Length: 149
Figure 1: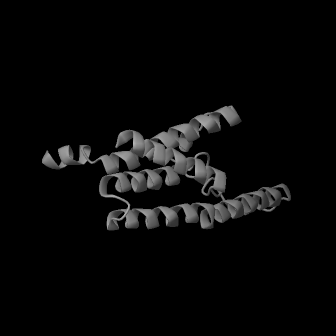
Figure 2 (figure 1 turned 135 degrees about the vertical axis):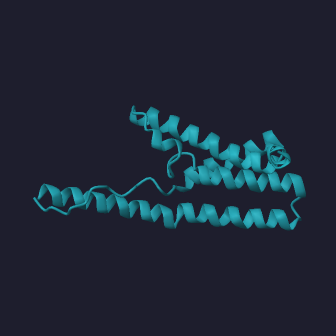
Figure 3 (figure 1 turned 180 degrees about the vertical axis):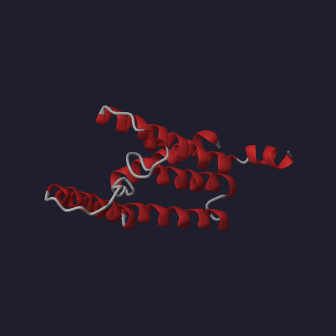
């Protein structure tokens, strides 16, 4: 029980988890408003506005800076981790999402042409982020950590 008690008092972890939860809820609300359709997968899925990955790592980074100081090795590790995650979200994962969209369009085109590709599922397209989505997630994470710490 001591472990769970200590875990519940870890403000850095709480900041990071809260950043993720808030971003996922906002992402679901924004998606529902724009599409007029509730999609429960948005509550846990990647991609979309704001970036929950950015919110999580920026909350982690900010809380670490506030707890240990900007000259600490803990902050250095969190900052590098945050930069890698945000770069990946805008780079590799965004490109993979674009490729998935093109492949899904090709599958649909081929099926209209009478080709049976024997593919049951489409590829996920919501996996990456635009720079604006990453920026909004980063700001959300920073504000979340500042409010909790």
